[in-house]
Image 1 (cartoon, rainbow, N blue to C red):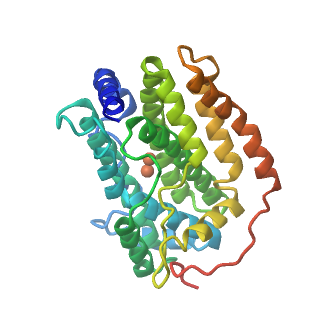
Image 2: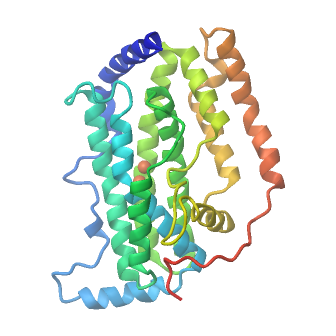
Image 3: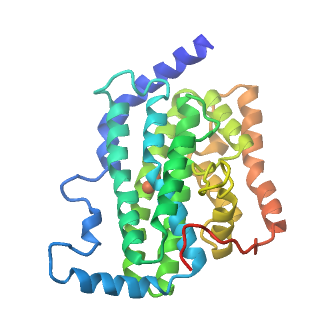
Length: 326
Ligand SMILES: [Fe+2]
Ligand SMILES: [Fe+2]
């Protein structure tokens, strides 16, 4: 175990130099990147009330499932304190406060913080949401934390975040196009800009892991295999509502997402395929027998998962969320 940790630290130190060089390719300058207020009515202006009225009129056309998914997405974004503290617990990340890993973690958190902020304000002004019920769910989710199966292993963590940033890119993008169909151009724009942040973050995490594959291929492959065997769970898997037990709302949230085609079992497979391609899993060299076996498992997995996905029925359970009025 000690050897394992020592080697991980060495690799983290090695990658840190690339991080410092490359970080700003994956982040945008703070002074000019979009802020929530760019999309929201300006409360210092006389036009404020009219703009809110227009917002509420467009939001009235959003389907029940779409509002439910948007609330679940917002709560997921607002559990950001959990993700930041989880990242700082990763071996090798918090060794040096001014080092590349901590710097990345802070800058990533700072960009992500805008997502929950924007969506929360939108939902508040939309007139569609029981804010108190939603806020209780948010507080619960942060208090309950999560169990992602990564431990404090940097490889597993950044494989997880590579996957997860791609998943959030897909879901925000789909909410954007659904919102447009439902006649809410402003919400569509908001989710579109959030989705593009997620895409940039995914590129960064995928880059870190591609560097790990260069220097520690066997362990990287074993970590990838392990995460895929466990399945990538969503960070909101403990989602609940007032009066319910831990995790009891999560399935209803994912059912709504699946029904609308916002995030489905097929998307999970597509993300896995993308990672396999980007990390050039088929041609990784320098691994022992164990690594080769792990590779075989990973390469066979997309087809296996697709067969299961084909048999899955679209959930049609009608569920009434405490978050949504009427
Ligand atoms: Fe986000
Ligand atoms: Fe993200």
